[in-house]
Structure formats: structure tokens, C-alpha cells
Image 1 (spheres, helix red, strand yellow):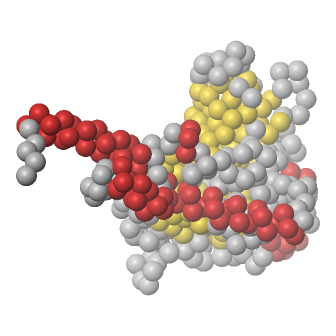
Image 2 (tube, helix red, strand yellow):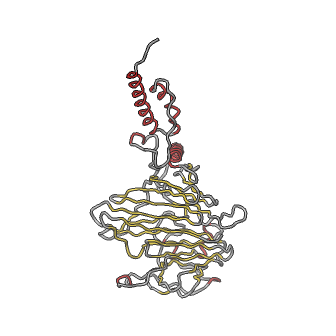
Image 3 (cartoon, rainbow, N blue to C red):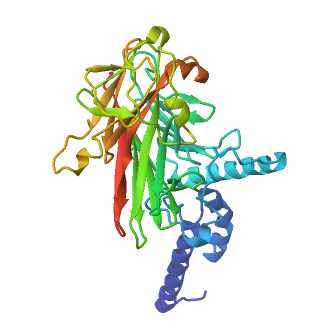
Length: 420
């Protein structure tokens, strides 16, 4: 019988330990699907030892080196809402296959309790589906960052969830508007239309909060868009970092299309005493009403009321409840001339929607933005279905925000409720 000296046993143990560490490192860069395929190679490398257990693939422990970009592609297809894009049938089929693969890869990397990624049956960009313990849910389209559905729990009976957003033919919902104002003058240029968004991060506490962060770059600007679902609210935040050497000027908004049961029962509370003027909405591909449609006058008819002030003419909101059965397009804010003073009154940081027929109300809260935009479609609402709606949200429309080199600008909107 061959005798193995203690020194030889120590050497063999050291070699096997080195091989074990090598295999663990090898397996740590594989997705769960690739783990089983690597078991045989791992077993041979270890000289017959069982393969080490599958390492944790949580967001914080899963490494994504450059070598694995083909396994986990995070860059998403270009914006799905661009009407000028035309694809042949074969190209559409190929795009649908690629979208499914991307959704699977995203789900393997970022999926967790309360967050999953699914492919769009129509072949568009994947969708992130967020949900929390009380049943509230949200759908985020990854191609352009459009929130197409928000269903918070508002009743104790049955499942108790109700759709808040009005979405028609891939338009509506909650979307980001972000434009750069050229230093030489001229029309502002969109920073997000046609941009290629990537999933940068995701997080959750498994019960009452789920978050997804999208990101893209435009020239010297790095843009992050963070969507968070809570049990009684949802939040959308934008962060813009200027990595260039020159300051940039930005106009922006987060526009939400809020659904109401009937036209007569629609109002908002919380704008009393605030200056406002007629103003078109910022142009956005996801908006149901274009700027021209929003500003077009309509016959007051049976819903007659006072005339809207001309664009650029400021007045003050005098009513505690702003009834929105007629067509309006307004910006509530401190007039630009007032902002030149050392002390001036800003727009309210929040207001509450009132749906008289459902009895539900939702607060819209602005953070970092200077203005509040508010639009009701009046008689044009029936072009977009039987439900009435408002297009509203915080904005920085009248005075551009200046982001200096090396600095960042942050702003957010929160839609919250206490209907329970």
C-alpha cells in the first residue's frame, strides 16, 4: 500500500483549494442557465470533486464584467414610439425575438420579488412590472420610460385596485419631457426622444417598495430616470449630470394623464391664490393632446364659463376648487418677472385631484420643478375613449434650469393617496 507523506497531503490539499477558488470565480460570471452547462467542466477541473454551490445572483453580488455582455445585454431597443420607423415583416419578427431575449436577460439579472420583466407581444420594448404587498402595481415601458399603468389599492373590498392613468394606443400614462435649450437660441431639442435607455439598477424591500432606474447619455449629459412604486404612492425622478465643460439650459416636465369617471365631476384643490396663464404643454410623443390641440379654443356650449386669459396674460386663481369641465391649458407658477425679486411666492408644492363620482382623490407633489402644468381636454376627450382625463404635472417650462459643468440637477413627481 502506497504511503502518502504529510507534505504531499498538504500540497494536494492546497492545489485542490486553488482549483476550487478558480471554479467559483468561473461560475460567478455565469447566469443560472449557464451554470448547469458548466458543471461538467467544473467537475473535471476539480478532479472528481462535486461542483461548488451556485453563488448568489442578487443585484449587489452579481458581477457583470465586460466579457459577459453577450450573456446579459442591458442596452434596450430604441424608442418604440417613433412613428417614422418602418420595419418589414422579417425585421419585425427578428426584433420580437431579440426583445424576448432581452426581457429574459433583464429578468435573470434584475428580477426579484415584486419586479419582473416581460416581452411586449407586439414586438416593442420590454416592460417592467412592479408590484407590492398590498396589491398595488405599475407597468413601465423600458424603451421610452413611459409608465403605462398605475393601479394602487384604493378600496378594501375585492382586490381593491383601480387604474389611475389614461392610456390610449401607446400614448398617455406618465412620461418624461426633457429638452435642451441651445445657447445660440432657436427651438429646444429633446434629450430623450429616440434615446437608447438601459436598465442601470433595481432594488426592493420585498414588501412595500420596488424601484427601477433607467439611464442614457446625450452628448455630455448623463440622464437617470428612476421609477418607484410604494404601497400608497408612485414616484418618478430625473437626475441630469453635466460632464462637459460648458453650462447647459434645460426645460422639463413629468406629465401624467389622470383618468376620471365623468367630465362634470372633475376638479382640483390646492391652487387658490396662485398666479397662472394660458400656455401650451411641452411637445411630447406620448401626449394625447398636441400643443396646438391643447390651445385650440372650443365653443363653451352648455359648459360655458369665463374666457381663458390670452397666452402671456397672468391672473390669479380665486377658487378653492378649480372645476375642469371646460377646456383649459395653464401653467401655475410665479411669473418670470417676479422671480427676479429677492423674495417671491412660488407655486404650490402639491394639489389634489377630485373625482366627484368615484369619490377618489390623488395628490400630485412636485420636487425640484418650478411650475405646475394643468390641462383639461373639454369636449375633445371623446377622441380618446369614454373616460375624461387631465394632463398635468410639475414642470420647469417658463425659465430654463441651468446645469453647470460638474453639477447635477434633480427633480421628481409623486402621485400619492390616502383613499384607504
